[in-house]
Length: 335
Image (cartoon, rainbow, N blue to C red; front, top):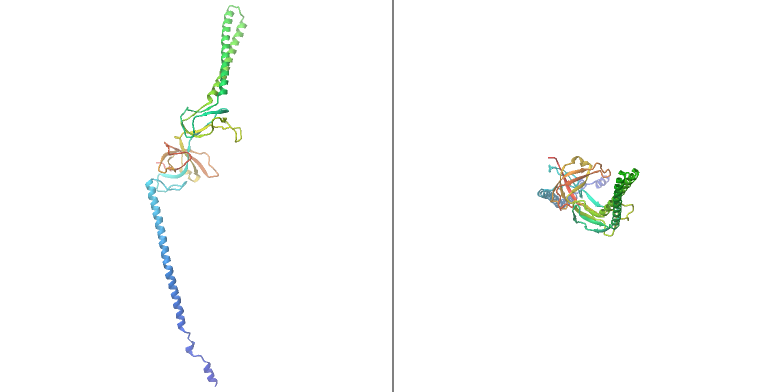
């Protein structure tokens, strides 16, 4: 009885085996999913490689095109204030600066006065000695007339003193007049002559003031700025305050005397020397090139900026070089 019950409770060995069909079904499903994922990702990877290759080819073509353009125009593509490419053997450094007039002259009156006439305007060419401004000279001409009248009176006094002295001299020889009288007349004549020189000096000063009312150009150049208008009060120097009379009449410069002003980084100073040859090209006309030399190296640096001012003199400038515009300067190595 018990034996039969035990046989009923015993598990058949065939039933102990796990069904294999479900397991292989799961494996097949996983493999199918993996294959689908791979087939989906592969086209994207291919497209990405094509994009990268296209970008690389475009960059190479751009570099080649820029190089060819630079060679055809003879220009460098070096950034501002940085050394040029090593391929240019003659150029040690390329920087940018601003074109300036070597000398800017501002005409100022010698005394307080009123502008009567201005014969030029901004941009006009002027020559050395040309009359450009007239100041009101009525007061100084009146003073000149007064001084000339005093000169005439002094001349009369001298003439009378000379006649008196000649008469006294003759009388003193015949002992009609005393020696003391002769000495007194001689001293009076000397005083009259001194008064004449004084009057002539006053007249010359008045004449100088009249001449100063006519202001002439001291150079051959161009008027770069007109600072006053007719009937405006001007003075030689300001006594404080921003609303006082003007202290200058005109500003002018020589357009054939130009320089390039550069703030040079201290790290590049070793590549620059006084008298060094340079090549200048204005940014507005990059195809124009001019020769130049280093004319000035500032004796003191700007500590805040870490720069030193350099000035390059331009040889034979023309109308394409305009002051205050930027220009590129290539510092050349010694031959």
